[in-house]
Image (cartoon, rainbow, N blue to C red; front, top):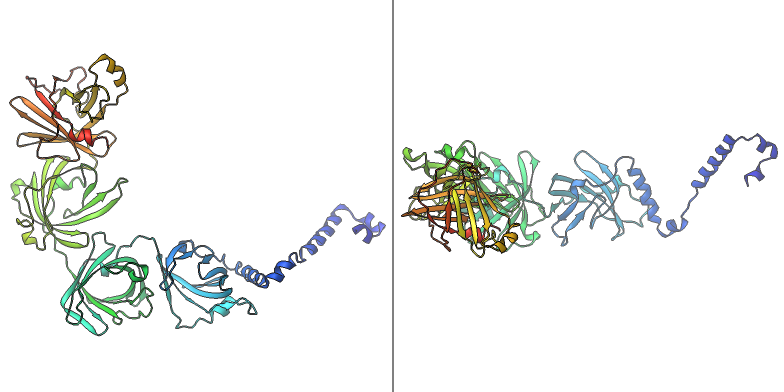
Length: 585
């Protein structure tokens, strides 16, 4: 076709580069022609949206911040609201964006309502979105809306809506809501000043328990737990706390989410609580349907320190590795945590040492103190009794929580027969095992050591002075081959002591966090030994008993220690109570 338009002389004068230029011009013209008349005719608004969107790309990528993505709750909307990079469910998809200093403005297309709306939105906290919005302009209206024009229709007194992030952990409560408090409160014009109500933060620091006392004008006494979700500054010393309130009738998000606007002056915090989850009509800490004035109550002042033999090892575990005790610095505080299978911890007790009531001469091996304790969402006083067993092993008795320090160690809250909890250094070192030798004992049927033979060989401190070994021992030739694949059990000693002529030593099984307590006692040349997991009991006689059929001293050629063996051959009973039933859990 091109050849028909040009003369032969012209064609001869065109070189290859010139032809390329002509072709490029023709291609540019062709690309300018519309290619989809049908789509434009069927959806006339689509061309307008694309045109606006192309304009937006020049000043911003137009997406919502990644930190906003997730599920959100807004009062009055039954379903959770999903926010992603390009849309807010129920509001629309982003068409255009304009970022300003404190807020972001978005032009959204709501395909359900077939209209455009503007939202002016900001995030004062990672768990909160607040916004105002315009009316929704129908798509059919001409001309297409401009972002600034539609956003300009939002009146200054338009409602400021709040959205709260769902499925997020609580945050540490702000200082004004941390500690112990007394408070008075008012609902509308009804006051409750006497008796004074109380509140105190829970041990985890992310929530607070509030006890509203009943008064002549407000007869309902109630307990409310406040969980902190977000906190941000409104300016001029006024802050806003978003929380969830839990009580006997609050179950849904609509019933639990509340906002608290507050201000602290001269040691008194004035608080106004929203009537519902919308957090609208909340303007002043001194006005509202529910207002409070809260005064902090000082915690007791520490007047003692924990002994050095406790605090030089900062972390102690119980023998099952389910509880951790951590001493702080200075040595007046201790925290008790529960541990799960993945070693994640949850704070159980926050302890402050108040006074010790044992004489100085016992301080090297025993320590009893009255302590101030925060447990759960309540606080009080407790008697703690410690005794040192070895460098790496201590034991603890805990009393009951009492309302007064003066009675914490009284018979009403303290029992000397309370079981001792044995604690071991969180990172114990190996120490020399007592009671060395090689023992042959009958194997309990439930023992994990032997699958064939009837006997178990127990070696203490022979191959290594710090080691204990349980090995299946064949009692006939036919059993030997089967037992070749049997795996021995290995333990490492961490500490030992004597108490009323009963010997104890704590050992850990190889590759496991749990500890076993080996207990032994001698009567008229008869020595009794037991292995019990997770605890060191005061009583030795429990479970089955098995007499030792053979005892040998450690072989000097293989022994890792120079222990001297006893002159007499002892009759021994090995109580594999916990080792058999629990040791291989």
